[in-house]
Length: 616
Ligand SMILES: Nc1ncnc2c1ncn2[C@@H]1O[C@H](COP(=O)(O)OP(=O)(O)OP(=O)(O)O)[C@@H](O)[C@H]1O
Figure: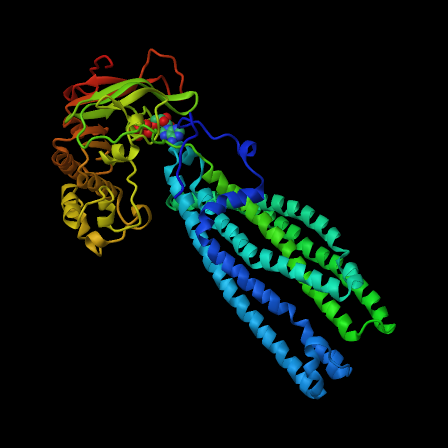
């Protein structure tokens, strides 16, 4: 479980320092991000590496049947050492044995490779699932200010494709790094024992290769950074356009949407082409350098065969081992490219994981009791953007059991008042108290559990009507859901849906009308037994008859509860015990784009909106 916490002394809204100033290099960064979630899968990865080692060991035996066939069966040289027992057999039989051994070694190596690849993939998928879970959990804890800055499409691309690239690196490390390093070392040792001179000639090209590989890795990483960023931007734009497909079609602006899509799409194409070219350039370079070594061995070894100091079979074995050595060298340099890609992705995932802007619980935070009394905003100041205050010196008291209606012009900050009480954002100055306790000293979860909230844009999940209503209260059973549906007039339309309360609503509740969505959101509040109810324009987009019924329903559902309503609806305002106008103070200078600063004015509901009393 990855926990989120603000840096000591960090406030909500205080952004994290620029990444470059505090982050690690790409590879350690990849390890730092993946290590905590990879730990439980380390035994499986270790088992994979052991299987790969066996596979590599079997592969290393492959040249020997060839030498057997050439030297003993074809050239007629007597076998020595461990193979002396073959001398009693005919050349045909030795050839048969060599052929059978070649097949058997291939089958064994293939089987080991299959098992190890499946096992590595399984471990990697386990790590991936946990990593995605950790990143997701972390983002759920991050402040809305952070989410306001981070486009959801960009976040989605980090959560999915960047994590996938990191997994590719995990699999590659288990299946390439460890076994191939082993193969390389064994082949070097065998070559050194077998023919030290030829071995030295063969490996002389390796330092050059290492220098080139390091330079290549840097280039790949840079190109991959650009490509990953381009991916993120395209995802963000696509997500935005898809979410607004109705607006695009309604305004007939498919051309503009195509234009908006085409720009990041083109940039991604260019970035990917560049990244692919950088990666592709490597393969021929490595091959040329390696063939240089093999060519030298062929010349020097061939001369030794001609002079009789080396057998043809031995030269073939040296060349085969050089081939065996070059193959892991090639894959190790390719691995460096995979790691560079993973490093670029890890940086993007780490950027999310390292974000610590959260409306965090204070270490001393305590739970809020079940029953709550007075809610007070005292001299509250708040700005989404520095220098653009939305609320300043805002005071409001809502007593236990009271229904208070918040009125005011669009943009005055009414919804913001509700968001601050929910601690979706923290106040910049002043304080909000519940029963004299500053809400920053209370556990967020307990605070939010004591509040039923109907937002202005009802957020519905792609789930059934019943599941959407039950979202308002963790313990709600079917009977409670249907009762809440009855109270919020969901009953009126639910029977027209194909599966009633079990109808899936589609993304964002797209299968419902605006008014129907609002009723489902109201039912969410009705099903909750929270003592404090916050309603943001609950009767908007309802027809007058439904609105009147909903007003009555709200009355019934909120009896004995403390209610704060934001509305422009006079009928709804009439049920309030008190009306507070959140206005912009005309006597103060215009410091915001839209006018003066907002302040609260109490009014009696029956004299709306002319008469005003001084701010509380
Ligand atoms: N996430 C945000 N980031 C930056 N500014 C925001 C954000 N949300 C709201 N604002 C700004 O804060 C101001 C108050 O917004 P708020 O939604 O509280 O107004 P409101 O009184 O509820 O308006 P309405 O009656 O139109 O719903 C507006 O000027 C708005 O542009």
